Length: 152
Picture 1: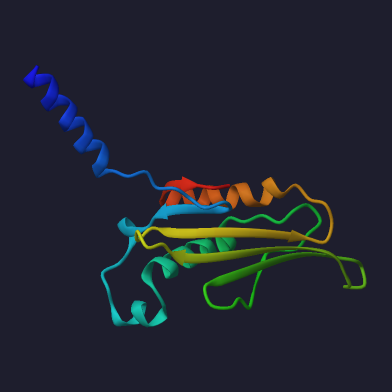
Picture 2: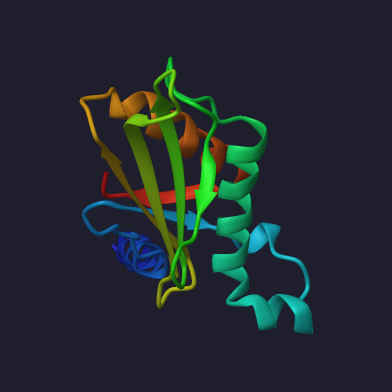
């Protein structure tokens, strides 16, 4: 009886030590801590290291791996505000006029628990297969960081 009581108590203690991380709707949560460089004045000046690392990784994805939709041009970074990064791909006609565009707005944040938060909003001027542009991008993040929770 005493052994059973100790086992139950031990189980409760272990269960209470690791609370489940939950993501808000539309949010993907990553553990970025293992990839952070040691704190330096330059990194701290640029912003929170978790946000900087997430933004750098997304920038690397667009520079090295992102493929535009058929008929669209390469992805180009546009001016974002604060911790938001914007990437745009356009389809142009023979005269150079924009016929259609896809815009991916990434928002990065640090949660109170220290994990990195990523939100992605994809806007398109015509119907597209959103999964074909969002899936590979999140796959890149998944290869670089440990996904802790997802609300997507």
